[in-house]
Length: 89
Image (cartoon, rainbow, N blue to C red; front, side, top):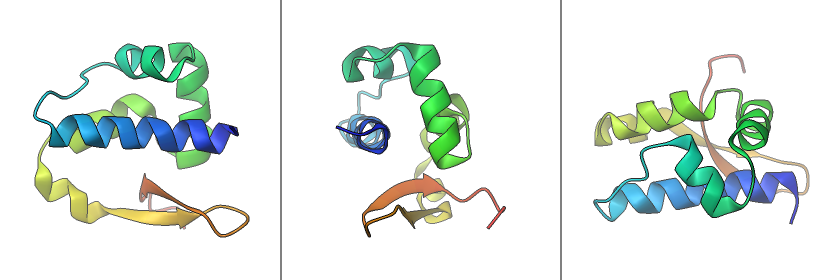
């Protein structure tokens, strides 16, 4: 798996936890399930998504209305990854 894949798996895991009604509430909880340290996953997430993992989690957990502020970003090769728009496009 590439770093992109790990970040995508992090997003997918967190989104699934929100949908299940038992959200993962810490970056440490996500990192332990992904198999990375909190520090390393946080740096990867920031570099690929342009937003800290903690800020992403807070914004998504604040309510379903936030879903509209997300879009798919393209990585090389045509794959897409859900990420919050940072306004720096």
